[in-house]
Image 1 (cartoon, helix red, strand yellow):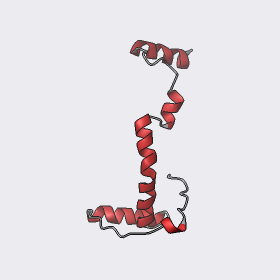
Image 2 (spheres, one colour):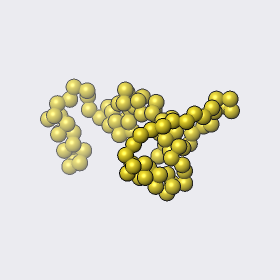
Image 3 (cartoon, helix red, strand yellow):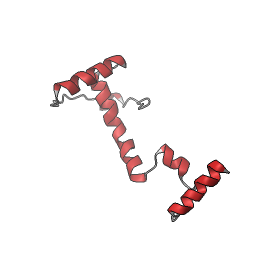
Image 4 (tube, helix red, strand yellow):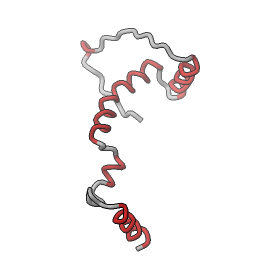
Length: 93
């Protein structure tokens, strides 16, 4: 889901301990998920945190895969009626 993460140079890999308070059910669910996917909860959280900048960039740019495929199909000022006409032509010929 998150792809492969490149390791930082050795001198940058300083680890620190963090205490997070969560409901027990979420901790147990996350541990189970990590176990089923052959990883640890720490690695799972680290992968998610490393992925946050990409998520934020996508939110700022509205640049998700589905939007990239749809972009340019209709003019930006298209009306609902124009959109309907486009869909009718596309799917009903």
